[in-house]
Image 1: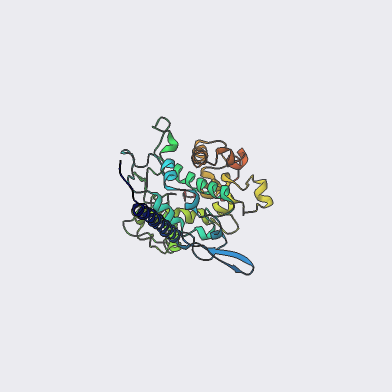
Image 2: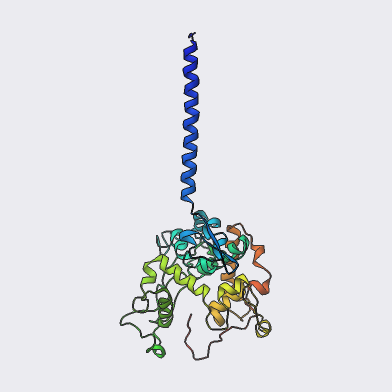
Length: 331
């Protein structure tokens, strides 16, 4: 048995005090570090309206930046769940697509309402809707594929065996084709035809007309191009897919009679027209819808939030822009 003197007890008590003090200081230091790692929210009022700036992910004094940002409710592990098979050995874009590229691309558009419009449920639904389109258009899955067809989104970043160069001579003065360039499908929402590469390149300030291959070389740029398409109406007076989905678009009487309503179904009408819509329950449309519902489940929202059939699909909708019988597809 060891003898303990009064001085020993005093020393031990002092040591405990010092230990508590050091632990407290460490806690304060860690708290400050964590506070510094989170971007402060800047808030002000412009013409009576509250606007915010959240740094790199939602920058530029926007009302939408006062809401959650995408990374607040959609994380890396969820992206991995949605696109579980994209890096499988049999996939065709192994190592290309990732969460960082998506979030970096979205930061350009979050101040404009992409994934930041409405409450948390609406925000999550929009990301699921956008990625549902992306997954369905880049999938190499099929009925008996491991994990099912909805697990194989982002399998491609370009069309593997293009049947043509997609150069339309009608646009030779406004968007002349570059010698040797092929304007076949590339990207998260595949771009076709030189005029579409030209228009999107103009918007992104990237020379896609002369260098369409940039889309298949840079995943962030590929996502930016896709989100730009999501936010941009095909024609003046028509909604963008974003507006049709989040409900900021108000249908006219003509829209209502054409069975076009705010919701996921109309996003297909905006993006694909009569290639997909107004044909009943066709396979192309059902594949896109299946991806959306699957992603709602994986993100914890639940497919019941998809809405009734006439909102979820475009089976009975008249297309906004019917194709002329002899007109080349402008997918």
